[in-house]
Amino acid sequence: MTAPPPAAADAPAAATSTAAAPPSTAFIEYRAVSKAFAGQPVLRDLSLSISRGEILFIVGTSGVGKSVAIKLLIGLYRIDAGEIWFDGQRVDQLPERALAPLRKRIGMVFQSATLFDSMTLAENVALPLRKHRRLAWSAALDDARRRLAQVHMTEHADRYPAELSDGMRKRAAIARTLALDPEVVLFDEPTTGLDPVSARRIDRLIRELASRLGVTAVVVSHDPPSIFGTADRIALLYQGAIRALATPDALRASPDPIVQQFITGQSTGPMETPGF
Ligand SMILES: Nc1ncnc2c1ncn2[C@@H]1O[C@H](COP(=O)(O)OP(=O)(O)O)[C@@H](O)[C@H]1O
Ligand SMILES: [Mg+2]
Image (tube, rainbow, N blue to C red; front, side, top):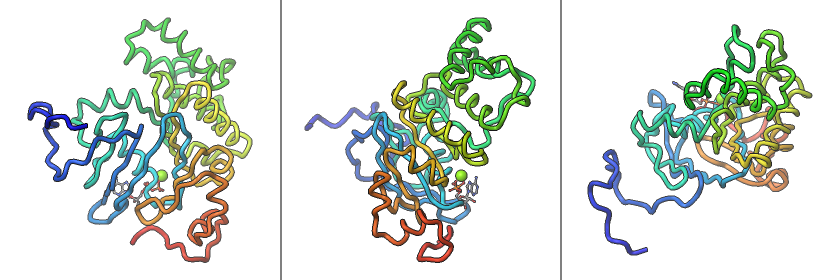
């Protein structure tokens, strides 16, 4: 499109970067994103596009930067260089006050998702509804029960977190994140620490959310059964960037020795542990 340049008033205040690349048309796009902590690079020119409705797994060894990568999307950390786009909007330079609306559209299930012990599951899920939707408490509780049904927890709605297994608490935390009808849910190691049966239930739930609600799922994991049984595509993070991006079958067939070492989990091979 050869539109005239935008009026200065339309330009984002913080946009001081040099050559203006065209706006992203991907649903989510990381463009050459770099992030360091105390001079230690974690992400280096990471580029990745994610489609609406897909289940994308970001995988890699511990400490490689998976959690940092997803937290950048909702402004929990700020990037040092590059761009992050969401649904046509540049989000890496949003001011603080614009982050709350963004986090309604992009929900996150944290690795150590904690529920309030003194509240039932329904009450826990009702909290964000009351806060963000301004629902009356009884209406929020009714809606919370519907959200708990989405994660197959209807019969546990009136129980307290301490009475439940880790897998059930995780599902309730997912229901709480779903309460605001996010378009994207970021899951940080949703199956870590769960027994295999509970872990596979979480995997199935993620697939259901994608197929039934159209939720785009970005899942951080290093759990091979979960990764290969759930992902539409897998992005292997290695030395600060995406080493491979492929469907599960294509990744399995990859000739890349780094990819093969990650898949087989062998301690010896070309893969270097984080820090470079
Ligand atoms: N808030 C922080 N301050 C300093 N270093 C951090 C911070 N968050 C993450 N890091 C570092 O960034 C690297 C990647 O961390 P992380 O994304 O949590 O790894 P993982 O792939 O296991 O999720 C690690 O070296 C970690 O120590
Ligand atoms: Mg992590």
